[in-house]
Amino acid sequence: MPSIASQQLDSIHAMLGAGQRSLRLESHSLILWGMSFGGLALVSNHLLTADQIPDAATRAIAWLGLMSLLLGAVSLLDWQLTRRAKLARDELWSFIHRQVLKVWWLLLSAGVLGTFATFFFGGAYLVFPLWLVLVGLGLYVHGLFSEQTVEWVGGLLIALGVCSVLFRLDAQSLQYLAAAAFGLGMPLLALLQGQRHATSTPFWLRGAKLLLWLGVVLVPPLLAQRLADAQQPAAAPLQTLQEYARNPLTRQTVLLPAGLSIPVHVEVSGDAFSPSASSVLPLVLKRPVEVLVEHGRPTGQWRYPAGPWQHEGYPTALLIPWMRATLQPGIGPQLQVGLVVNMTARAPS
Image 1: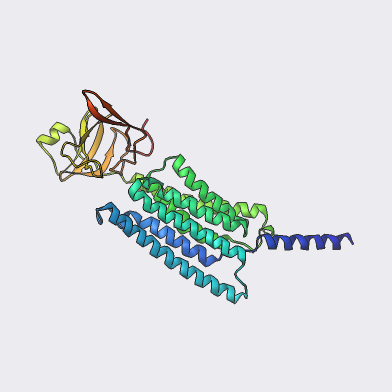
Image 2: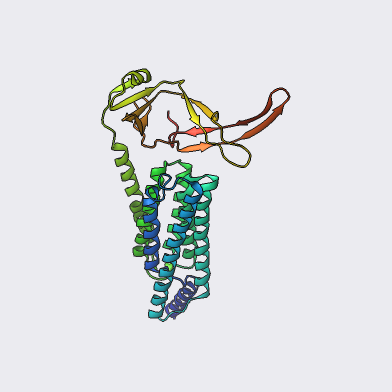
């Protein structure tokens, strides 16, 4: 008799679990969205670039149109495939499923608008972390009513997005991480999904799935970054700035000494100030820098003396933490700003 009662209690618990986690994230949805996000992240630095579209506003509109078209097409295809799968299983669209889809589309819309806003307000460094967090939120919300593995993977995506900013990963590492998390992680999640109800999956098995997922997502970006760092340019003759001015070679490394003043010509625009040829900001080097030059033009590769070569020719971060205006008699109006220029993701030792 106790065994029968125990079986009945287990059946009741199973039915309660089925009611609480009644959704299943379709495998084709994860594959479609993952490949779309991952592919776009992987080719983003070659698509609609500043060289192809110099005007920032036009480039922003082009990216807005591209993202809207891509996400709209994937959404329609996902909807049709999910509808067909539900009809094949003789299932109806539940109220919870419809609400979760609304949240998913809302998060994607926020990502599109956030990316669009970076063209006007800055913060392009945060685009990939933003998408990691938003997609992670979408999976986490879906996982609340589905298998716990989906919920945990959503939490891991959120953690990856936050940690990538906290550890100040460079732009290339962020790109590799986002491409792997979406292009590899989401299709893998489609394979790792077990039965419909999370209670049927042991805790140790879910933990093993998460470790496997983390390995697949983290190892490729780490290997890609290591290979990129290992690709050092061929040795070139080292010249001082004076030697380079007297006898430039086809290919050489030019040493810029500490204390050198580098003029930054600023193209001013807006509703209050006019362009001026005297808008020049002199930046003084804090330490010597070696710059690789070919045919009279910097290649974008540089390093501190005896340090590793850097492949990003532009600052990783330009910050204006404060701004102060003054108007004193006899001096006139002045604008003082704080400018932080970081050429590497981490400050050199």
